[in-house]
Amino acid sequence: MARDDPEIENFISDSLLLDEEKGEIITSLRELVLGAFPQSEEKIKYGGLVFIVDNRLFCGVFPRKDHVSMEFDNGALMSDPHGLLEGGGKHRRHLKLSRLEDIEDKKAGYYLRQSFLD
Image (cartoon, rainbow, N blue to C red; front, side, top):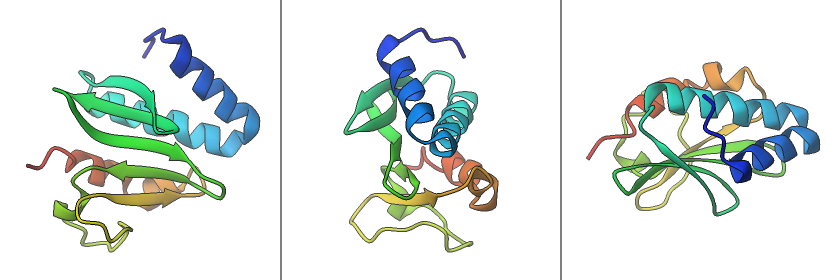
């Protein structure tokens, strides 16, 4: 996953230094997204790491005070049989991840795979 963008590498390094567990969550989510969508372009935007395909920002990972938020641009259209997506806006939904285990426990991969719904 060597993309060699200094801004992204600094964001990851700073995240790990400030809060190791949040940094590990961010790193793991990045690997999950790039594994599922290797064509993704990454950018630091809005205080987090966003993923873009065909000029569409479909997913973002944002450190918050007590958790890491994994946000989906079309989350309101996504199937949520587990009731894990949060948010009440018109389009976006997010997962709150406080522990590394939450990535699996809150089925981040399941929701990520739906992130290309139109």
